[in-house]
Image 1 (tube, one colour):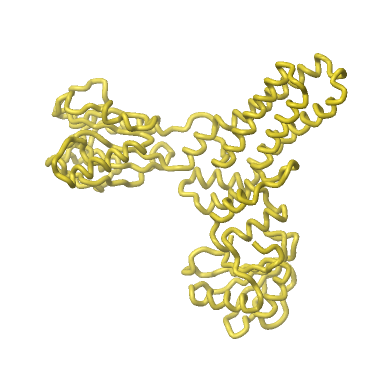
Image 2 (cartoon, rainbow, N blue to C red; image 1 turned 45 degrees about the horizontal axis):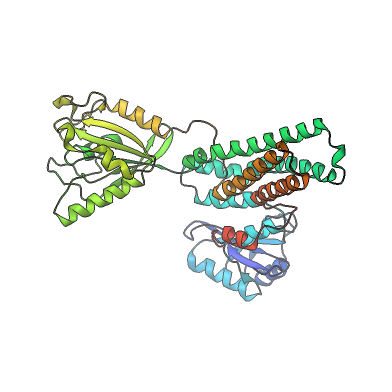
Length: 441
């Protein structure tokens, strides 16, 4: 990434929209833009129509640094969309001396020039990649700096405690019992605050993703009929013939304010049919990756027809809801949820209990932390260091070791926002973050 080059990239999405924005950023942004337009550049922050040399007209806006997105001089050319048209405009800018932007380079420059913290930059990528409303809401909060403010407030308290302890290193005799008690209490409170974030991480992560609800069970239990009934439309093939479902089928379902992926799987049984065996294995793979498993058996099937516990042993902590289908044929499993979603049904009954159970299984109780996986890892390391500092203070270990533990916690918290006074965030970390961005961001 060249610090002093002037870069160009397309800042808008797909080229089939109405308008595309070609963005320049760098010390020669104004000069390069001036070389491809006819006439003078418009005044700063004024959108004006200008012809492009040998091309079409563009709306041009100049945003001098440091009051721009990147903190550098920025010029945007708003042109008609269309892959060929946009490519010719970009080629003209490149021919005038700009350099093609790398993925995430505009946002990286905004971070380098302190226009964004690292967590805010990651929030921009999260906005672009959001696939659920909850994910989008959390990403917007990241971009707004909510996480950064919370982290920096705790980091500041850790730094003040470290500084006070370091100030007493040469005069430990001046630290009385009240100071020691206050140090212990403060370290414990800081550790508890970071642990609170970590406790809400998994709920926040689950809110950002679509929970996978897998319908599984023996053949001919009516799994596909139940799948269609929950969706309210015919999506999977339904037949009284066992083994009809050979592959898994998935569809989106909104339930209880959550967006889910509902998965119908092949009936689990031993078979000599190679295709059916492959379908069964795919079903077991879906069970292994499920957040919720709806285990279905028919009321016309013996209770011992399948061994749910054996089949569900591969599930990793998924909630299990047991359902007895074909309620009109009687009940053999009174403790299970009873439904009637047989192939002949036009109006399945008793689905409300199953819907309620599903909504409860995917509900996200408690606080949700909006931090991403990298933030969690740094917070975990900071929490461990704060626990260590608390133990050292409680046990009367030398203040030098306490100060070192606090410095480790402070650095890890600073790496969440990318603003640490104890050394820069590693270049490999920054590259890993910004390389995931699209070109033009």
